[in-house]
Length: 490
Image 1 (cartoon, rainbow, N blue to C red):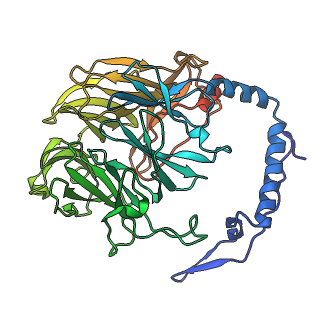
Image 2 (image 1 turned 30 degrees about the horizontal axis):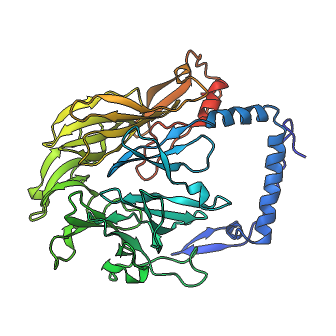
Image 3 (image 1 turned 120 degrees about the vertical axis):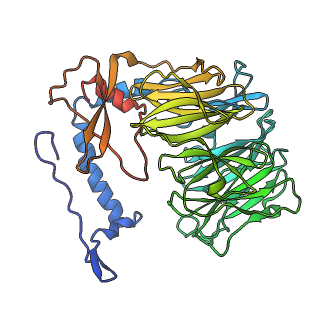
């Protein structure tokens, strides 16, 4: 039996004589047998490892007090970013200890909220979840397309719900993966991406090829869905659909694996004979359409700007030589992380030294104002071009997410929703320091701890970093971090 005072004695792990030959280089893989997570030997190995782990954890005298404190910290009401969907304000809310947040609808900003979709009720064992980016509303707020995922799988099944009644229609769209739903502006149906139905037994392990874009008409069976776009000449291409805010254009985004570059194709939906054709198809950079005025598209891209810029592109002459730069690449290390078009303005989230800045630019790209944030934190924005205001969520290391409403014309913000938590965020502080890596790169780091804590060099410290996929660790709130800080940790 392991103890806190003696060394842990781990079970032996068998090594197998497995060696792969990669173009003349031999690579041993002695633990490959553990990849079969359903084999009796793997299950026995996991059980033996757990026996050691939990025996040690159960001997920690402070464990129950930490568990109780973390549960109290977790048990707080929290809100997701609202959106305006026709006559409705739609938002998510978690009462504190729910496994999944519940989606609510309300008439206007202060109407009485009513449950629209509770994913906790989708299965008794909690294995069915609302898929990531798995909701999309019609322009008039009448219908909600929503997708459920089961058992952690990427497969998602789409349904259509009447927002006013909360009733699901007969629509059922299966074998969709890595896909959103993009409604036509008339609400007649939505575009989505899917693969062919897999062979029996291959659904969770088969390789997916030839993703296709379809159009599903409300009330129709999936067998009647229209094939909109496919590229059998490129079976590894990923294809996703979007519809411009004015409803005129269908955009098809093409990706390849984890490569950040993409292509954009489009179709003029006002032309009954219009075909999907190339628009930004050089596959030389990342392109994101954030809005358009007729044939002029506003595109966030890293083409010619490693920290991104916003350009205006006329689809009739889309070559880079004809682009007009609206928001240029920042010269002071800030990255243009996202752009949302609200009215005739661009609401931009900039990232500098791993924290966010919120700025409002005119339609000509000129900076009008910067929105004051509570501190060094992270921001996400919600809004549509037709809105007269937008919402943003702010969070930091010891600051749970608060929702604010902002007037883009003045930059004035009002607090819209704030969680009530069992601690005072003012008891803690986050400071930013910088270090130089071996190659001279200036690396930002945050130090988070109780106010007034003496940094003696002997403080218990959790150090975490990440370096993949060009992802920065911007400030985020964690109950576990707060519990650690309360105990004197850094």
